[in-house]
Image 1 (cartoon, helix red, strand yellow):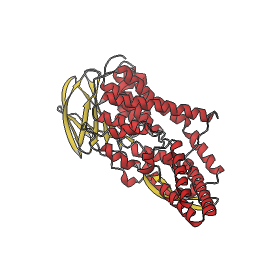
Image 2: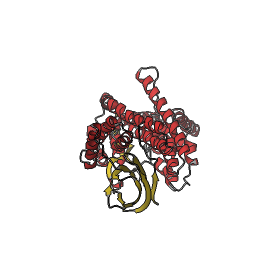
Image 3: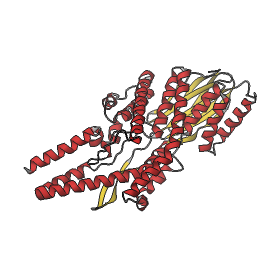
Image 4: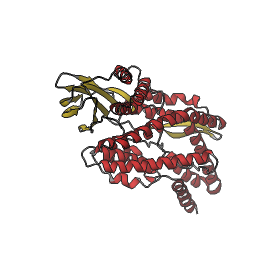
Length: 454
């Protein structure tokens, strides 16, 4: 009878998790362990995308599809990457509609409170959504589809605008719910000091100056100087010490007065360094009406973040520039997690209480053996949610040169290696070199020149 109870209990708990939308791969294998499978061999055309295809139809499908879009892009499969990101955006629309219905009370959410946060369907945070649109813009750019590029760059900007509008409101709502449940996040601040260090100078999890800079370059090349000026200024607002962006603002401001420099074209380097660090798991004491429970919680460690390293670009004529950091992606991820702390504490407290009640009932109905079995399940199921988009870069950097029209041989160099390539430069046009630093060296692609009216 006891063993029948144990079997039925475990099956019911697992079934509840599955029905609540979990991806069992994330439940039983930490996501960073999974990601090692498809991060190996990136850029060599041999990434094991079958691992991602298997997860694309799960409740965590949007996460696997984001990875798939990025992996196939780095492997040069632009059509495959575009198709993956199109599916990603469909997930975003479904998620937004579900959130709207919850807000209007038309539907209710049932969290997987008896297992762990891995049993909740993955919802892409704002910084991931912004990157997805930026990468899709690069896909269209690579295909020389000017209209598609413009649409995706505007979508990335819209994601940032919407995120800014709802940011403070969502944080306040989570803090109010924590207060209603009798949870004081400030009492646990010491456990999250590492998150604040990992976030560094990042003030909000949705501010991405790299995507603003990408967009500004595109608008400037097509003579949309008002739009370019707006986006350059937004990038500068996030990084006020970036002197080269100040020069961009001055140049485009003069262009609005009809004073654009003649006899020159622009070469911009969009540089992505390394990989965003994964989350770690820590044990955190959560107070409940039945005492203090130790629960698993995700965090970031600043020691996992690589130091930012610039890429230098040199032209044969002696012109050179070094990239500067525009986006600290690890900082965005850490800041996002820090913003989610009140809501996660509420879920953890409710989960701990539910598990306590289950254990108490098992002890009352089946004695010490029943209590032991439920306690064992609680121990095994206590896993932190480590899911994030792990093929994103650690840092997004950029630099640009103004060069005379013609073919130019450029030398790219980083502390980890270099590359040389020949690029076309068109008067008043834009040539973008997309550079990604992978463990095996630099991956470089020269995108089609942008020029003329849209």
